[in-house]
Image 1 (cartoon, rainbow, N blue to C red):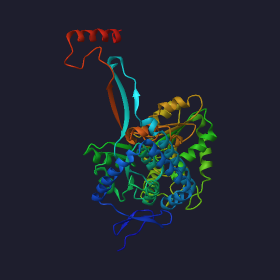
Image 2: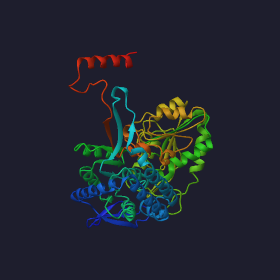
Image 3: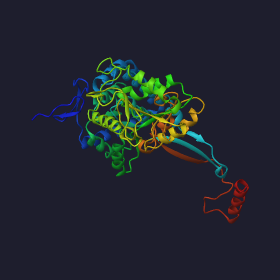
Image 4: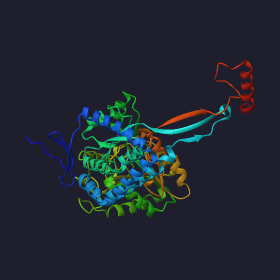
Length: 498
């Protein structure tokens, strides 16, 4: 009996990973599946390439990375079309993804020397005879395991920063988007043809596990919390450090003095862009009592205008077919437990699509509120005040991003969200801000990409001291005398004893 081929689901034929469109089933590409030995060999080649790449220095790497940035910008339509074909993402959403990715390549290339380069650090009086110096040296080879929902923006957030820091990268794209991953590798090879500084290994989860055990110097992973725990377990065997960006269940808080039109517009975008398949997407909203009904009405009116389909629509297909069951279960559970669908509902799941669904009065212990849905659905619940909203928003183990709409107290509320990031009077904007770090807390992972913190994630801090004068208070020597120790004690009392 021939197995049924589900559009969008990766399949293996004759040792090749075959990628297809979730909307049409059209083939996007096929790539050799790497064995564990081949993954190890790729890392070995990358290690030799890393020495050459690090030897270019910040200036040489900046030049190459800016050329790659220019190539990405010049071919933005081509890559957007490939993202659309392979993952189903609407072209407009793909273009927005690429704009932010290109911005991150540019920032990492231009700022690596300033953030990571050798610099003098102020020494302290106790060791005034020494000068202090700090630099960040590349790890060597970074393994990047990327997701399918943002197959360019997310891995670029690790890859571009790792490359700018002087590392080589072995990239394992998601099995749902290998064509996009290989495109990135091939385009980089056009501007860096000399050595395999950025390479790809393709396959299913076992290839990602092999990369964790391949001898890389650090792993940067983006994906589900469950898989993040497996990655961390595998890396623990060799004490390989990890950077984990895992799941999320981000909340928006709408305070009484919010601009409701702006809040509704941003909420619909933040919740439904990329068919809701966004780790930092808005999945929960807590609107205070005085504005709840008006806010819900504005969200439903805006979301109800969105189109769903394969080409030219606002919302495309669900990229990973198995996620359809999760979305259906969350909607059914919310309705069965007393929630109401004010848009969409039980019949919203129409494979490979899901129509926008807005649920209200959903119990806080339901799956739709507590579990990551990763679909174009949204729960909006009524709260007494912002205090209750913060309490509910922080009740989950996730802590990736969040959003607050309001005027007088919005920033103070945002600071209280248990999350790595927050937007005030907008949604998702911290992702495109290349100067800011991106990452979560709790079950959303740890470590940061983007910004100065993102660059430092891919460099080892190296501290150096250099003697510049004779010690006036010799202490770290066996040549010290009792008189030296007495003077040292007296000096410490004078400096710190009051």
